[in-house]
Image 1: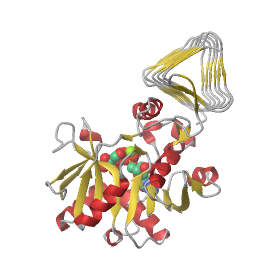
Image 2 (image 1 turned 45 degrees about the vertical axis):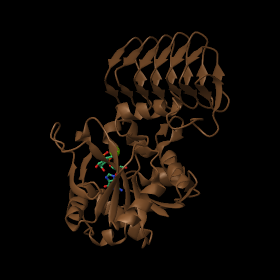
Image 3 (image 1 turned 135 degrees about the vertical axis):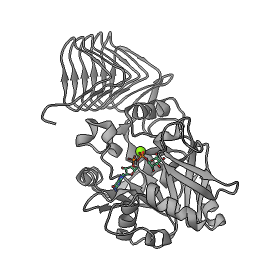
Length: 361
Ligand code: GDD
Ligand code: MG
């Protein structure tokens, strides 16, 4: 089976991290999100995927020069300009020469959905398109889907105003499509699958949806990005959190050579080259490749990306420290802050719920 993986969005909600690195290449518990998405597809019989690229396509091509990731063979379709979700599906599927039933996934969704069962449901119902559904408390950030008892979609409403959603079943961002759907997507302009294609398909009676209780998370916001790592480290998606991670004490995982002299509490991951000095304290956190947590520093429910440093007595709570960033002595970062790539946070400063970017971008 072949898949189109949508990875062309700009990741605006994760700026400034996504200025240099597209959202799907950010590591989640030590592994790029895209590889986690592709590995899931591979486990369910997808052998080839076309990456639907727009924003920073160079980063994907440089990241996977062998055109292999997560056990899936890759090809690339680079849009001349952003075509939105349906336009991107049409463009990528056409570029790859897809003429059979195929799968589409939003590349920022982590899920353990039983894709094989979904394909079977799709074939059985005679659908042109089948949408996987998840259930959430606040559907207003998602596409809301109303079905009848057989799963035929009666309404698809993208991002209804808070409190006005007709259901809490939402579009989980995995679709099984017949190639005929491509003919229904106008070429050469922006087309949203959620706002245009699916609502139009409802009328044909051949849009279906299948509910799933499997693990599901859209990683597109800072809170969700952090959650994605903690869910994996906490074992919600099976262990080990990474194929080559070792558990050095209950819930504390390491990968490669690391130096841990300080305290590390569960669930945590210290990646290759990571250093936790004596007198430092880490809990519920990811210490990325080559990162250092110095004496007296405290890291809680946070993610440090490659090469970042937490200097003496600094603290980071519920936040993300970008690659190469340095949090100088005694600085305190909290409340879903994002320290952008290469930023130096002044000694002793207090950062609460802020996003810091370097002035030169
Ligand atoms: N190639 C390409 N071109 N990809 C795009 C474009 C584009 O113009 N625009 C967005 N994408 C990609 C993004 O990279 C992402 O992987 C996917 O399409 C969905 O875009 P998001 O920006 O993440 O959308 P969302 O999270 O607000 O909403 C979507 O996902 C929800 C589930 O996670 C919608 O499909 C909702 O209906 C759905 O509930
Ligand atoms: Mg999203």
